[in-house]
Image 1 (tube, rainbow, N blue to C red):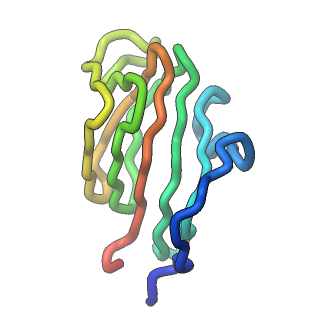
Image 2 (tube, rainbow, N blue to C red):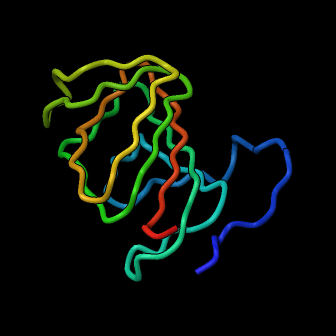
Length: 126
């Protein structure tokens, strides 16, 4: 299957529109899909998205999914491994990166001051 992304040269992203809460996330976390699409049911596709946390927002349980995930912390702070009440975990600064294979448990997550992540998701083989 070919990569499902269109050819895009440099352009300025509109950071004020097209944000949505991903399924299963709290309201203070929003995504903006910037390229491609992921068909989780049929295990196909690739997507690149921005994910932002509002200050103080946290998830309550670890995540696990069927696709590869690469995550780059662009700005702000991200706490990884907090508990269901948003307590504890390890804090990471900007310019932090993670690459996770399918089914790798990760999270829960929290951001004290808010953050912006760049994420790439894809199924194997790409």
